[in-house]
Image (cartoon, rainbow, N blue to C red; front, side, top):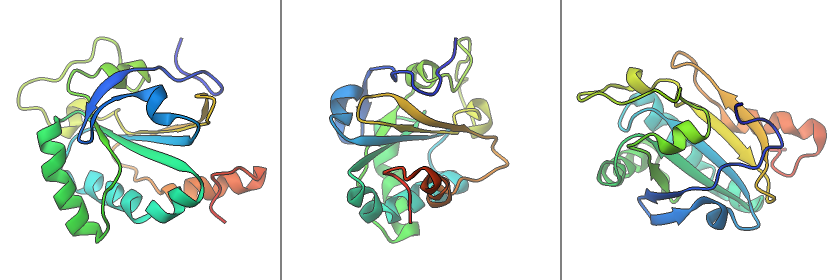
Length: 172
């Protein structure tokens, strides 16, 4: 059975460009947004990670932590962050999970259990790793959004839709 609304998110330990984290400990008592992409340095991924960086003040106002995920390694994430910051004009202060073995992607049902990454892979090899999870302080999923490579993501608009329910993450 896949991950559903109000399920407690999987806890995991992973390497990030900020060091090793244990997910539930990293969330603490905050709201959290886990957003993922299939590959570092692709134009859409860079644009969307830059947009998240530009929203740092909005996340802070809402007591929300953001964490990215990509299937590349920590060294690539460090290089990519310089690219993200140059493009967006904002510091990308959030960690990015290095999910090279796809363990986190599979735990969050972003990929089939039998998925693997071939040598010389492209973003198309892990295309379904394009998801957003909004997680409440009790570690429960409040929103899941997964979409194809042909569709971009607009996090402010996504969070604005939560306004109808007076949700604490709603952008007003």
